[in-house]
Length: 92
Image 1: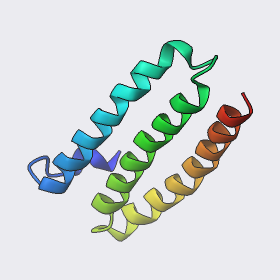
Image 2 (image 1 turned 90 degrees about the vertical axis):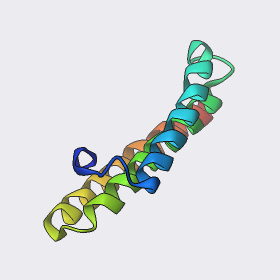
Image 3 (image 1 turned 120 degrees about the vertical axis):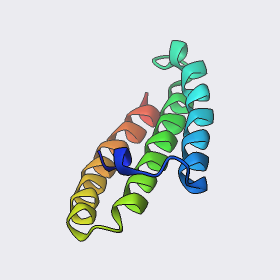
């Protein structure tokens, strides 16, 4: 999406990418047991990776009003899905 237009040399983009990659490691660790005893661990780390990405999208798109409106809509839709994933992970 709009992250393709990001300046990859910007420190905040690098930090966000590094942080999302570090959290994704824990998603991978929890994956084998995602449908068993580590469901909530998997879901929380997955949602965290998505929130980091959505935050980066919003920050990068903030410079262009048309892109910012599209990203805002995408964030609203995504938060609905992420909420459903959290509820599913909690309920098992």
